[in-house]
Image (cartoon, rainbow, N blue to C red; front, side, top):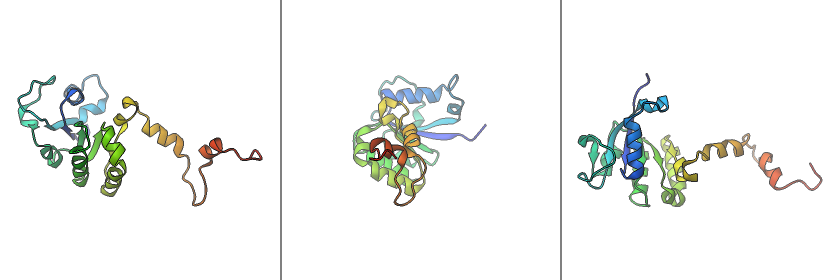
Length: 170
């Protein structure tokens, strides 16, 4: 068995509760789910009734506890909105953690900043769930539209020729 991957959740609403439930019951799921371990979860209210039962010691009202926990390898941002989501994503990246987010607003407004920070830190930011209702579309688009790497001054003819046919049919 491979080493465990520590997961930190920012938010435990409907989606966060679903993610936590999946992580707690990996049977009959993809085998890699068994390698994921829920380490910390940031919530607004420690006393609120939840759809999923979690050990009290992994809950916190301070999202920085999740982001800064050395046992957390991947931060899953599910709080929505621009702030504090953007700051927490950037903080997670700065501490060397990969991030998964379904936050359309923060990706639309700050996607380039977040992607640049992730590239500089050498971590991943996965945004599949922020587009297409969670349908895996980003990777297939990157793969099918990417083609071979272009040489300087050369266009990617696979898509360019479809959009702009040459006048003499070449």
